[in-house]
Length: 101
Image (tube, rainbow, N blue to C red; front, side, top):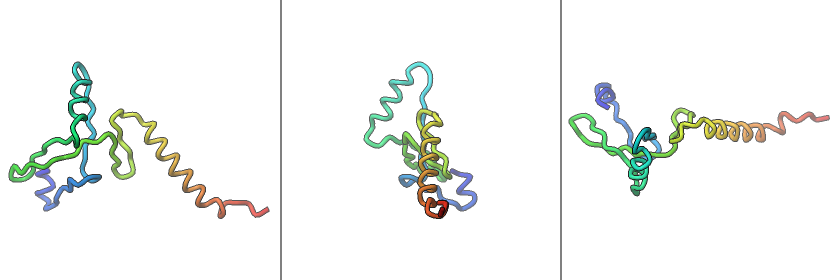
């Protein structure tokens, strides 16, 4: 965050903006996952310029510049999302693409 501050940029921690997906691995990972995700609004504290503390939301799924990242690190969700978007685009163009004969 301090690198952004050097460029006079502010990080937006609003819902849907700057969020994180956490994946726990190894011994005790399941209990740690349950502890974090059992919170009403899971978040981590991040120090910014001047040691100001910000709260960053922890989410199961995050979309950044059109790419979907999920807690399972499985690309099938991203593939499904892109297929659905493509089908919607094709439907909207069907009258244009239809053979008039």
